[in-house]
Length: 50
Length: 384
Figure: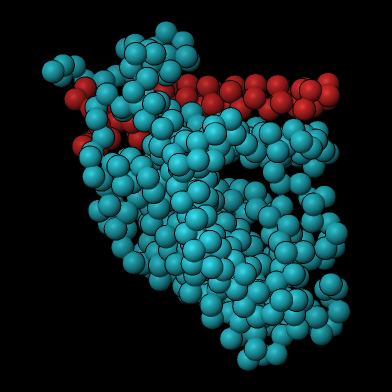
């Protein structure tokens, strides 16, 4: 497998690699954060807080 | 130094394991944070020493070009500035190992930012120009994307790279290259190479397009439309239009929302075409784009749902503006991590073939647009 020295640490963790279960989990975190931020801002708007 | 190979599954307890420990991610998150706040004027940060302000100062010193700030024509914005700063820091000092867990948050920030972009694209903002204009722009966008993908295949360009160029060129927004990055599974070097290709072509075209307009004797409103649909980014569109005439520039401002609101359709089109192609040809070694996706990614589906909700004005003003400030934060952090990840040789390694397909597809689009707009105006298919 291609090792990318600029993005890979001594343990072999490549921060630009994104695949498998780790990718799915990262997607879930991103999606949850996005929905929380959007819902929070929108609810604030509807309640006259913006 | 520990040599234990990194295997995510070994340490996973729940989906939150991808956030790692606070101690592990803090240095990388701080690196992204400081690059972001010294690049852009971000909501809640009263820092005047930003790259954005430096460029504005230089714009004031240099003076406008066709009424446009030079650094707008060169695409200075909340993605480009932190990317540039990250690229300089990464290539000058390298990236310390302790930063890398934190920098991996780019993969959370990309779906996060893409979903939060959805309220930004509301059809209602463009309907004043008429549905005929929107449909015309949509057809041109799809033809440009399809032709660029086809040309990339003919010229042997990696389909992730060609797909990135197709998305950015068709939508008239170079940052679509970044949006398409997680969707196509493009490499960082391909994304930035594609962005540079579209920007450079747009820069050249924005100065040459007024000559084309004069040659064929286009009316101001028709040239305004040609600028909007024929050139690479917003600053370059206005540079071309105001370079033609003040009236054409005003028409370009009036018509610009038409291009803007259909932008998601452009990058979704590129994604779905390449996704279907990789599903239909599962064993073709030449197809890389979207290959790792077993299904349409969940964040793409949620983006589409939010985009539909936005059409019903669920995200009212100023909620939409507040969400967009969060998008600026998000992409500023992500672009910093992307800039840090890229040695210059990785951008250069994708060569000049990308620029060749950008120039060919972009020029072909201008030729088709000139003929189509003149015919549409002559036969009253489009009214201004």
